[in-house]
Image 1: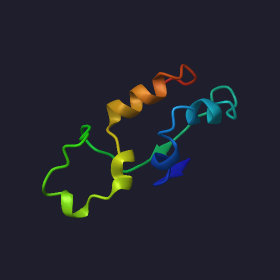
Image 2: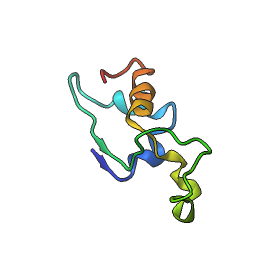
Image 3: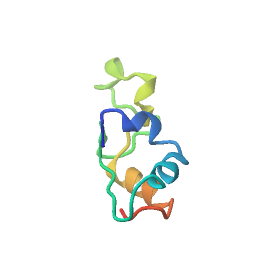
Image 4: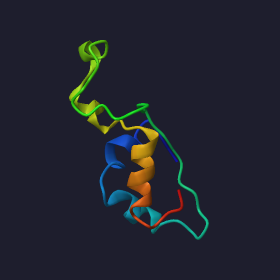
Length: 77
């Protein structure tokens, strides 16, 4: 389980594949992270710009995470 940290290392393309090898069959992975409703890309809204730090580029929406995890073929999302 990870709370408010997974977004910093879990966005790495290889991380989930590596950590999933440590799970027993049927094991679960849970993560609670800051998220967006949709990907912003370079379009940070003016209301967020005063608070936006470069590290926030690791904040993604549910569909991004679904795709990111599913593409490994190592977990059932």
